[in-house]
Length: 248
View 1 (spheres, rainbow, N blue to C red):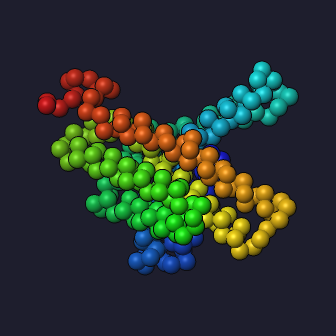
View 2: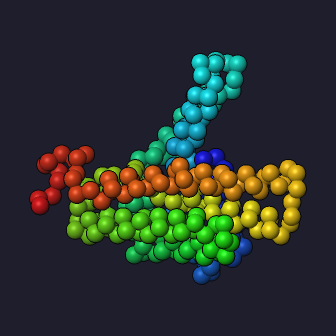
View 3: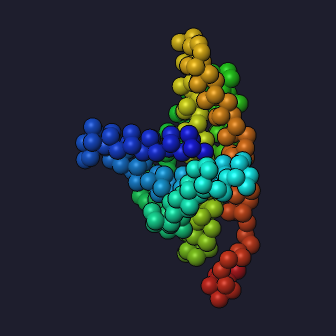
């Protein structure tokens, strides 16, 4: 979680640098600005929610001792809880992502992002060991696009309450896929280093651990998108009162 989300944050910082390097009014600068605007809400939200989970699981490892001052996790557990609240709250950012980020200029920003992901997938496919993970991400990207189009179809009908009713779940879905993309990028760098640098010792262990952790994320986190996609495309609306639901 931490390493994958750190990759997402650094990607945003890279785009910020590229805006300044390219010129904010240039075509390239505007492209990076759209990508940054789209992912800023995700970068503030998914890592915050994931951080809470990560710290809680770390505390769990210590058992009862984890909740004592003998270890730093008890302090981290208190400190991390505010992360998903004071940056605008998860709910607000989720509404922003789905209600504005995805729909802005006819969905140009997500199209740019999906193109970035496809580029990474194609690069990963040049390494035999990464092909299965490139295929997994390609499949989940397709699932994300399908869910997005389904929700946009609801929005086109004017059913905005239904469209945004599960925005938090869409944020989670979007964040999982985006961080998986970051992990595949790290996997490419690690695999290239293993092939070209012939590393040894700690350097070898570092690159091998990167690939192993990438695999872990794909097998334990990325698979969660299946249940999220089922809920996000479910026609049964349960969180809106009957008075607010459109007539069917």
